[in-house]
Image 1 (cartoon, helix red, strand yellow):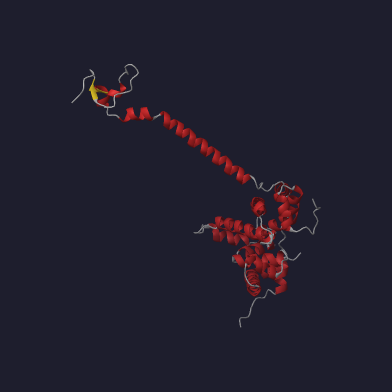
Image 2 (tube, rainbow over the protein chains, first blue to last red):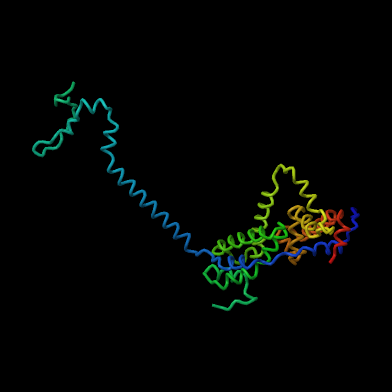
Length: 115
Length: 191
């Protein structure tokens, strides 16, 4: 069996340990802690609803923007050469309220069909 | 709403505090803040740090309160666990993985006599305490300083009562070994 060979007895150790005296909490800390109100049970739900509402708004706004942008996107995607020399038939002015011709043929700048 | 008294249970106070009862929040602070500050101070040896840890612990508790489940861990146990983890974080931040060159010198300075020739007994004891392995430190603080029973401390440390007794004995033996070189100064410095 292991024996201790310290000259410090258990009583001496208690005397040494008793030298440590912890501080009392400061008044500032006490005031801060006493005014810490637990978060309301509802607050996480409210936060979730708010986040959901923002998401819906953001998605809606993105959808509206997308609806407005397709023509610009189509133009931007067309090759520059085609824009200069060719006009889509459906872009020509309509006559007598008729709709655009069903057959979409590519015309030259002069309005003549290309090959 | 019922009056708050010394008999009002912690779980009841937490439930009331979670419903916005300011008196319950104050009662919880009155009941536990001092112990959390003491616990942190014994672990860290620095009053400001101990208060920071205590404040953070109580803040986390106030966030936890709405979800507190009665019949689970005791409030005090929960607080000690959180404060203990925060203390460990601070102790790790203080001790770099590769000790700086001054570390050894600092340790020597810690046990040097005061200018008046008397040993700074408190610093010596505190250093010996904070140098103990984590669990030995905790059980000594809980049982010796904060007055918990070995059984309570065992519950807090999630170990058996027998293991807690053994751990406490090892902690005391380690303290005696650490204080041995300064025996004369420590016992001679009684006041």
